[in-house]
Image (cartoon, rainbow, N blue to C red; front, side):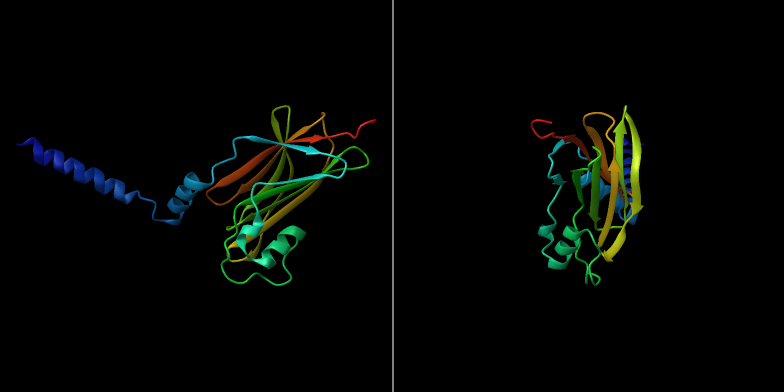
Length: 187
């Protein structure tokens, strides 16, 4: 028997098997999309928090070109009426930090996603994750889901590592921030 038909048969068998595993279902598409576009942030963001507070965001919601979405995001409140259509939001995570009178930080984190998510605000203490707050998003439209978590956090040291984590059905995105309170001169 010749080797050519055997090699050809093996090639056809391999191509057929790989075609059966292509990302055609929802799970496969979501995993492919995650690997292609949304991997975890690898750099830690340094956020100095002066007396007037500080804000950070990994993206700008204004790129959505939807004034109702922009107003709702900035107010961190659900829109007065549901957003119409499939205005896919970006994967956005943001953090506002302010010093409280008692020296603790008030952390207000919010997230926007095109799919339902579970959003977590996590502190890293002694190398271990400590959950500060977590909730499931609410739908603003078919393609826009929102979540916010607000907590007062007493710093165990001079600064804190916090993680903003958005988890969808088949993907997770997170940003790591080193939050550093800045004392005014003379204190």
